[in-house]
Amino acid sequence: MTFETVRKAVDTIKRSSLDELRDDFLQRCIDYARLRAQWTLLSKEARLEMDRHRTLTHNALISSRNALVRNMRAVSEDVAWSDDLSDDRRLIGDFACYVACHLALAGA
Image 1 (cartoon, helix red, strand yellow):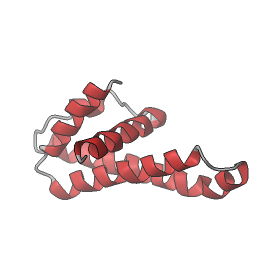
Image 2 (cartoon, one colour):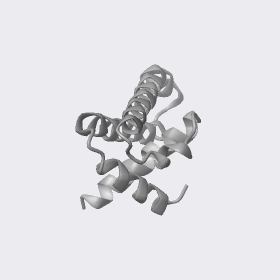
Image 3 (cartoon, one colour):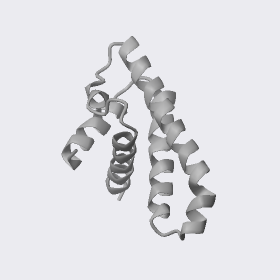
Image 4 (cartoon, one colour):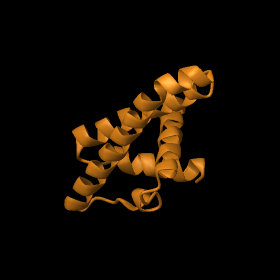
């Protein structure tokens, strides 16, 4: 996955007419990326404490992505950005981190 691929995906997602689902997905990308970045700085004990919350946040991200894609398909919007992710949890998490990075840089 390249940053250019993610940029194109974010552009496609932002064009979706499904405002609420789109915004929910983008926010969940940011939330997950924040937790995953914090994870790298935590002690083993702190990771154990945060693990359940991180898993629940990841699950919510995946559910949000699935709802967005399902509804984008229903209104004939382009979901090719999601096809490459399949159901690979790690890849979806990586994508979320790239999305959050793109959004942060675009806002700078």
